[in-house]
Image (cartoon, rainbow, N blue to C red; front, side, top):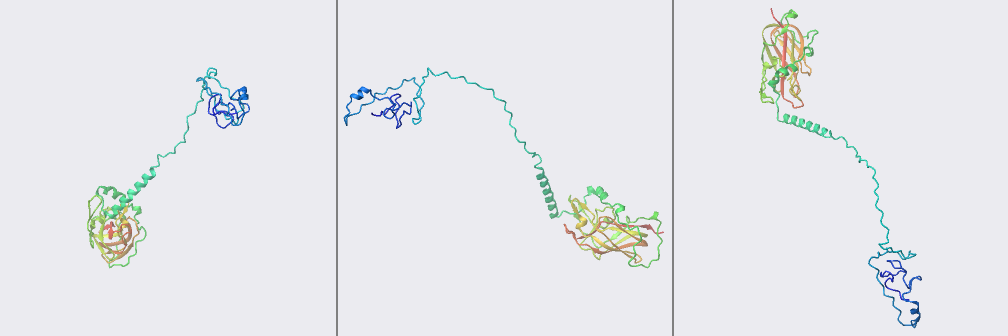
Length: 349
């Protein structure tokens, strides 16, 4: 039996299997259940001699246009021809049923960390850097240590030492290093003891050149700054004052009981401490008219440091500078300075 090339049922081109890959019909000549392509009588009457032509398959009639082609099947697993259903006999599709959707909760997102203050450390760092840069520029450009006149009253009040902090020696008077030729002097009545410094004059070794403060105002370092009652002002000389002498004239004969000094430039201007920057007097020798000499040593504090010397009659007081420090390590200024001196006593009878 000749194997047809096209399926005798649907007209689909056949492959090598035993079933049509389009409709699943058994292929004659390949499957025992397939219908022969020619009738049995015709096959029987056909000559069977060798070399005779084989009977041809019947012409294939294409299916009708309204017939839906069946889905392809795999002949190796097909056990029966598929059932073809025309559109007219197909069941009506069931209407779609839409079930109500369950409400979906809104998505939850992780809360972002609080970053409103993340800029604060950077801002603080920038401010600190700006302050350091400004201070460095001020020091490099030589900002001077002159006082600011607009702030004199407030600064003088804040810088003036309280009597309780002056370091006055309320005990026995200092023993003189050298006793003069004058005779004993009676101590004045305590009610008569007063500050004798306001009317003095002074002779100093030298005076440093004027400078200017940060506002451009001139600052002078004259001797009168030592008894003006303002610790922010000072007498100042250039260089090391060790061995130099300052002479004070009280203008009249007096009986001296106490002497004292602010032993440097007692000015703090913002972050700059001019007391530490300039040279400071560490020890002096007070000399009076009869030749008596009394040595006083000073600590590093920006306050009046007094010494009770006992009653001594005099009109002038000489201050010999025995020991002077080196310039400060920070922005050191090579100047010897004294902000204030004080003489307590009473006018002689």
